[in-house]
Length: 47
Image (cartoon, rainbow, N blue to C red; front, side):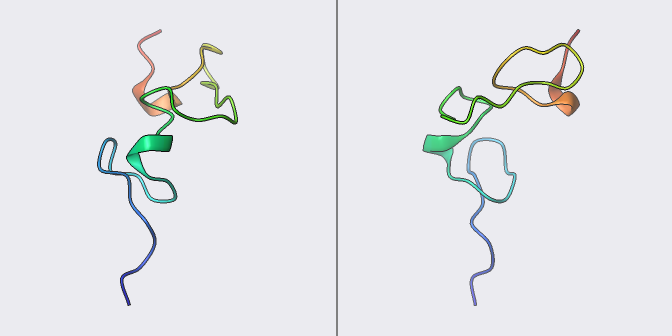
């Protein structure tokens, strides 16, 4: 088995680089829980 898909951009599982929220390619509108900005997660927040 090859396991879950993994993004080559951010290395997180569950999506591919073309759909990476870190790159702004996520249509679901993921927002940071800390600052509310789109396309990054709390772990990468600079606020």
